[in-house]
Image 1 (tube, helix red, strand yellow):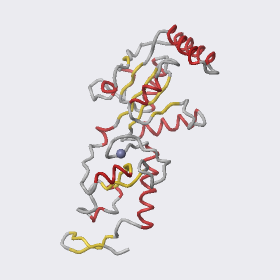
Image 2 (cartoon, protein in one colour; image 1 turned 30 degrees about the vertical axis):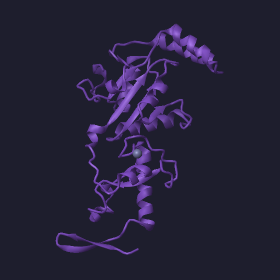
Image 3 (cartoon, helix red, strand yellow; image 1 turned 90 degrees about the vertical axis):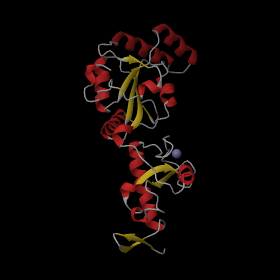
Image 4 (spheres, rainbow, N blue to C red; image 1 turned 180 degrees about the horizontal axis):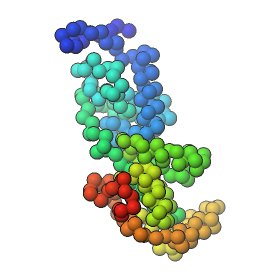
Length: 250
Ligand SMILES: [Zn+2]
């Protein structure tokens, strides 16, 4: 590979072009950190499936926030890299990307409610990665809890966390763990839920039905949790969200 030369403070500095092993390693690094944070595409904001091969149009590629063509000196600077879908990256071309400050982009919404209330379906409508214990990617409660803990520490996290959270104390614990930006409740009356579960006719219907009863027996709204209305509402940055003090009401 032939190095390119760029001006840097009056001197000519050699910059390796973006290819070969070094570019592969940079991609691996971006994929690793992106996958750990479930980081969305920096261009379109939609989730990236980090398991896809890099040749897949929906797979992860390295987006240079400051375009290589105009800022060759930033080609190999890791802070200038961000994950983007390969097709988004290509479509974007060689323009610079303005990225909002991470703190203003963080969105971790907790959706609580009894089994059968439609939390998971609603969560997927958000367009954000969904953390649901029922998802088969979690092999154990411990693994799921660890993922939630990492989510809580991630300043750029964007996700929806689905949990039953019948009691205000359980909800406060989860909200604190993931450092939630908002918590919402999706519920329906007990009879509607039971009917819905029976109609689905799954093999675990009986168990789910017991879960519904248990949820209503335990439920309290001492935290004044708000009902889910729209994603615009749940993701708006109003004074309502107090991530550091989840007991003060949502
Ligand atoms: Zn994209």
